[in-house]
Length: 123
View 1 (tube, helix red, strand yellow):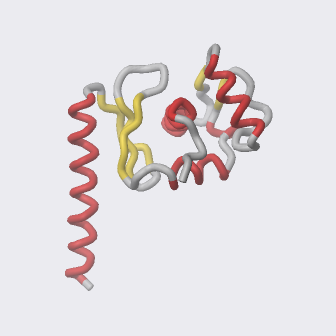
View 2 (tube, rainbow, N blue to C red):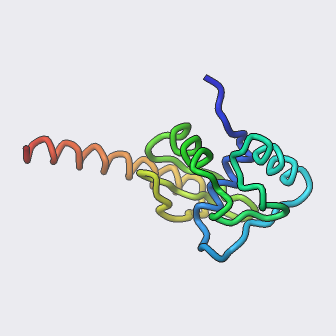
């Protein structure tokens, strides 16, 4: 099944999910074309122009972002160094080294399994 978002669009949305409510992710050149494509599909609020805030993300784009990515994953930091780590529909941290980011994702996945196993034993 094809993904709703391109890799660039996923990176933009991931970055927006990591910022505060009053901060912006500024776009330039072809990135604005990606934004306009999302607006045409009603996935981004029509009031977003050359920048995006959390308030511009629709429920539909959040749903697509979380459903089309694994439970625990890393995403390159849009317009910045490092990798953004997500787990359980939450932003966890930014890691600057790709190998370290992979270790964090693997560790979080193992922790999730251990927590599930502990829950089964307790029940």
